[in-house]
Amino acid sequence: MSNTAVTMVVTEPRGPLHPSVATTTPPAGMWVRVAVVASGVCHADIGTAAAAGPNISFPVTPGHEVAGVIAELGDQVEGWAVGDRVAVGWFGGSCGHCVFCRAGDVVHCLDRKVPGLSYPGGWAQSITVPADALARIPDGLDFFDAAPFGCAGVTTFNAVRKAGTPSGGRVAVYGIGGLGHLAVQFAAKLGFETIAIARGGRREKLARELGARHYIDSEAQAPGAALKKLGGADLIVYTASSTAPVDELLTGLNVHGQLTLVGVDAGSVTVPAARLVMNGHTITGHLTGSARETEEAMAFAVTTNVRPMIERMPLRQAGEAVTRLRSGTPRFRIILDATSGE
Image 1: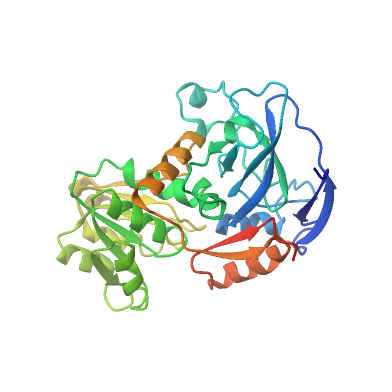
Image 2: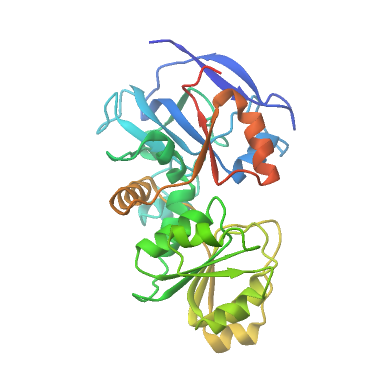
């Protein structure tokens, strides 16, 4: 077994990603070293790769959608074995003792860790993570499909299933991209009448193949008004990055309906307070999921044949992957192949 690993790093603010060869070290205590096979490229990674915020410690290695095989265990780790197939996502470990951890809400831990931010991320051939960040990959799901479940998969799965939408209700997904194409699949497979909303007509065929019963072209008509004509939605899963359309979209939300924000930008949401009150609307945000919930999302995907649409690129092309993601060209998730020699 080699004791070196290629790692994609940024060594200066807004600098380029470039490969570096690092020596792997045995993990200590409750930490685990994972030999990475596949690592996703997420919109959140664009900011990490820019490495331009305050208090950045260089070098920076982005990447928080990781799938691979346990290579080494810390001396206090129990329940895992070398060779286990595992995934690691945006949830990269928690303190275990704060009020949120004690309530079982590890995602909102006051000291929650994020790969790429709290410690070197997964755009590498090796990553070392806390054992509580590990999610077991089920049989029937390969590494390249499993990687996005640590972020995009578990996020959209939880956003749909935890909303409390009545059985047979209508779920609309706004934005059919890296998050939205998974949300449509989950909503349909969970038995909801699913409505896909995207700009232009070019994604209608795909949206229907993913399970949408209806498609709304937001360029051709106001999506909230179109939703209302269809009978309204009980849940709107909002996966677009711009929050500007939220106000109009709420006109298509049923009484006691919920809009869950998954995709966000630096903007704000402004809605008429009277309409919010009169219709009993709920607007909420949703952030990722725990390692156990990632396992549940993957198990559901295996049972119902939900899969991300991915493009593979060699690990050393991580910089090009970020450029493509900024331009909006991938369809829909880019996965870096850490085993590729290119």
